[in-house]
Image (cartoon, rainbow, N blue to C red; front, side, top):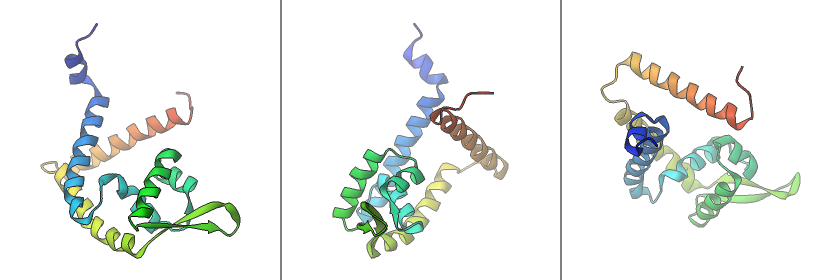
Length: 153
């Protein structure tokens, strides 16, 4: 059996997971003055950019499971960040809309996210930045294809 530390040294999954946790901690620190957490970012961005989506559409748009979206929207509704309105075309659905508070926070998020990108890419050349983004896009595509059940050709 391979030593766990040795596996960790070669594991892309470990690195991605570690980076995710580190990024969450950093963003949570910066967002605390706005009473936000990093997990709320994609929901705020998506509801402001595409107001009036169903919960299902929102989940698909930001690529999270519907149960997580339901929990997050409940918390965000309590915090006054979103409101749900009955869909006039389908009364069984609710449409998610940002509040004025969420719209104001959206504007505050942009410089925070820009700063976050600067921190992550500090010391990399422009060419390396392009390469990193391209490689991460390829990795995301591979994972998405697996989720979609697509077979390798």
